[in-house]
Image 1 (tube, rainbow, N blue to C red):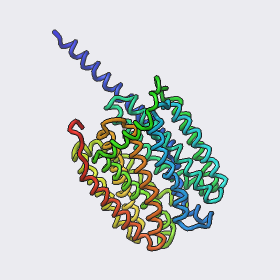
Image 2: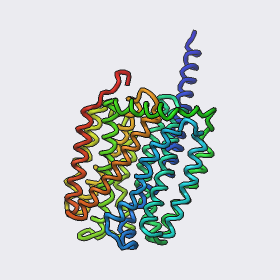
Image 3: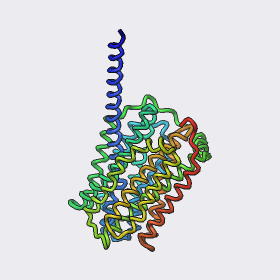
Image 4: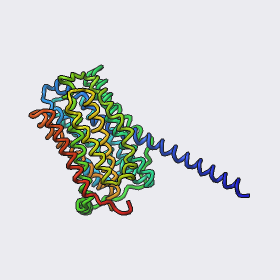
Length: 406
């Protein structure tokens, strides 16, 4: 007697579930695209590092530090946004940051002197981090816990995609139109990101009042006293240290003998990031199966397995090594980001700011330290430094103690 009603209820439930999945897929696509347009120039410029070093007539290490100066701006902007984000409308902040980002990006097309080049890259980092942090805060506040997890994964996947397609675009523009058009193209993408944010993000209802400076510092001190958060911050430092150490200086390895890879093909090499686009969203499944600590060990171990291949004189072996390092480090980044979100008991925006500070500081220091290793001792020394960073990250994972509710 009740079977038709039950069947109707089941059909309605399936329809709601399908609508929910469709909305989640659309939201994920928009969030991923916004991440791509925000950080597309962060690593894209690395694809033309050898060409920039020749144009500026400087050493690989000097050019790499100038290009990766964005990480300096991102590190300190993450902290600043954590302080002032309580009174910033998320939508307006993201749109303004992306509009302002287009200015230093376009100015790089003038090919200024190296100190000004580095200063403009720092400014890029400030605006990228502002947009990045405010978007993460918006997602955490506007989505349910379940939806937020998917949104964060989509945002990190867009970040991964920017590593691949940003490098391909950078190499293609520089190879066909010159280095200046490379930066003008990225400026247009920044403007597209601002338009997308304006069209898709909802305004905040009412920004919260700013916390007193003393209260902010007390929150930071509380986060730094938490062993699990300290470990997560250290893991983030090690992950970007290893990632930039690998993918910055491998450009110079591949452009020299015996590989002699040209500028356009150097961009194509970064198809090695393609597997990461599909594996990074699986971070949640890895944690469900292995737990946070073992999940990080698996990710960092996968990256470490790829390091011996980077020392081989065969291009195929080097590419395989790059695939493994990319998959492992991006997976570790996604898991570490999740650790911060779960372990922070209060003010997750401040915890995210501290994590981003540590993460990008690791990239800045890694670029500098491993640049000197590469310049004075060669690629093998650089790979040894990457291995040490991965080992340090694995050791820090021992200190993870996730809340029982997580």
